[in-house]
Length: 373
Ligand SMILES: *Cc1c(COP(=O)(O)O)cnc(C)c1O
Image (cartoon, rainbow, N blue to C red; front, side, top):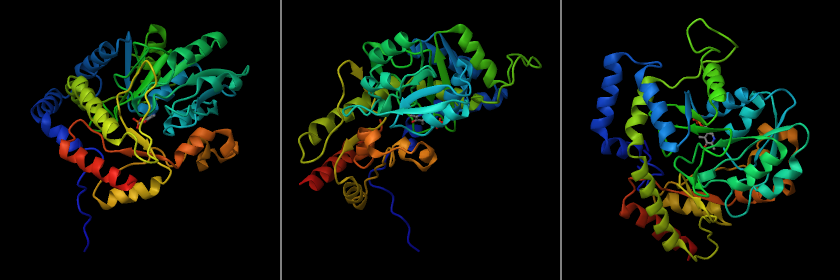
C-alpha cells in the first residue's frame, strides 16, 4: 500500500485556521444548535448586517453559495431570453454559467495582460442593442478597473454585477470592491478569504428595491410564509454557516494583512528570476491575494518540480472560459482572446494563506529559485 505523504507545504490549511480560533468557533456552533436557529433567525440576520457594514454596502442578502449569488442577482436585475451579458474570459465557470441559467447569452471579453482582469478597452466593441450588463471579476483578489468599467456602463446604460468571490476587502480607487456596481456577489466557499465550513454566499447592493427582489427570489418568491409574489428558488445561508462567518469576519482584516505580508515577501524574493513573472498590481488597486499567481512559460514543469518537493500548487484555471468544452458552441479561436489563451498555459498559484509559516514560505521560495536557476 502506498500512501501519499502529506504535503510539506499545503496549498491552504483550513485546519490550522480552525485551531487558531477553535474556542470561538465551537461556542458559535453550540449557540446555533442550542437555539435550533438553523434556517434564517438571529445568526443569519446578524451576519447580513455585519457583512454589509464591513464592506460599506447598504444591503446584504445572504444565499446558499457564490454561484447562486450571481444567478439571483441577474434574475433580480431582470435578465431575459436574448439579453447579452459581457464578462471576462478568465474566471471560474460560475461567472458565465449563471448568465446562461438566467436566460441570457454569454459574451466573453479578453483580459488585460498585467492584471488578468477584464480589459475595459475591449468592452465597447462588444456592446450592441441586446447588451444589458457587464460582470467584471476581481480575479485572484485584485479588483478589475472599476472606474473605467463604470464609465462605460453609465454611457451605455448597462448594469454592472461585480463577482467578488475572490476579493473580500479588496479596494479600487479608494472604494471597496463590491460597492461600485448595481450588485456584488460574494462566495464564502471554505477556501475563500472569508470561508464558511460548508457552502454560503451573499449579494451586496445599495439599492433597497433590488435587495428586496433578490431576497424574495432566494426565498421562494416571498418574504413571509405563504406570500409567493413570484416564482423563486430555495437558496439560503444556514444558521451554522452564518454564526461561523460572523466569528471569522472579526479576523478577516488581520488575515488579509497576513496575506499581503506573505505576498510582499514573495514579491521581494522572486523578483527578477529568469522567465518567472510575479503578480503585477495596477495603480489604485488594493489586492487581497486570494491567490498568488505567477507566470512561467514552462508552467507544467515548474508545477511538477514543486510537487516533487512537497509543495502544493493549483492552476487557476487550466482553460480560459471560452476554450472549455462547455462553450464549444461559441467556436472561440485563440486569437479571439489572446491574453486569456496565453495565460491558461502559464499561470500557477503558489501556496498563500494567513497561517503560512516563514519556514513553509521559505521552502516555496527556495524551490522556485532552484527551478529558475
Ligand atoms: C468561488 C467562485 C465563485 C462561486 O462561488 P461558490 O460559492 O463556489 O458557488 C464564483 N466566481 C468566482 C470567481 C469564484 O472564484
